[in-house]
Image (tube, rainbow, N blue to C red; front, side, top):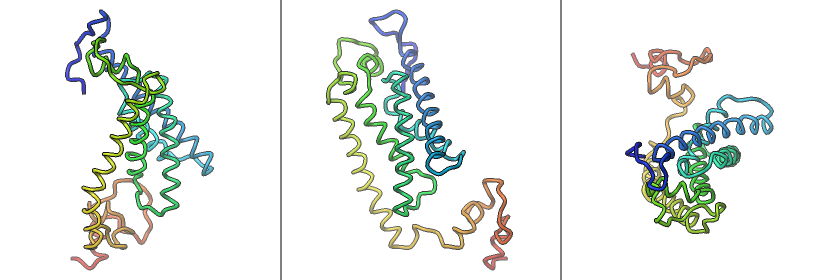
Length: 231
């Protein structure tokens, strides 16, 4: 989101937008890698086995969570962000399983849950110096709210909470009626047969993953069509 890199901060001679950009790369990497590792070991403790998919989604959850504050937090804070985003993801996955909520990609838990944590995290850990650098090009004469845990009071955290509520409200109002209408029309879900065969083969003509398919499952799109009586 920095439209210019070579912008020096007025109060220094060796810092500029490139400083915040470098910090963004560091915090993003730390949050994602921390979340991936914590998710891996956390799930291992809970379910008793290792799962590479958990690592992938954990890394994504860390990336999602740090996005809000990637340019305005210290590297150590990014590790905190990744640690808690992993447990947000793990916890919401447990809730989703108990509610029988159909979200095999963990999109709601990952983007919704970890994203919400990321907004709150920024309101807690944003550093005043970095906020001025990122949003005021280092002009120290400007006063901006910053993180609660960094001595900035409740202002920024309050704004982040309001933002979170507005996003939830907007999505509910705009997308809720669309999904409800699709449900009533019977077009929200695919048929049981298509779901068992898998959308890769039934809708896209081939498998996306080289897994061992059951013998009674179609391996090619032509096989799928023959199963349904198409020539």
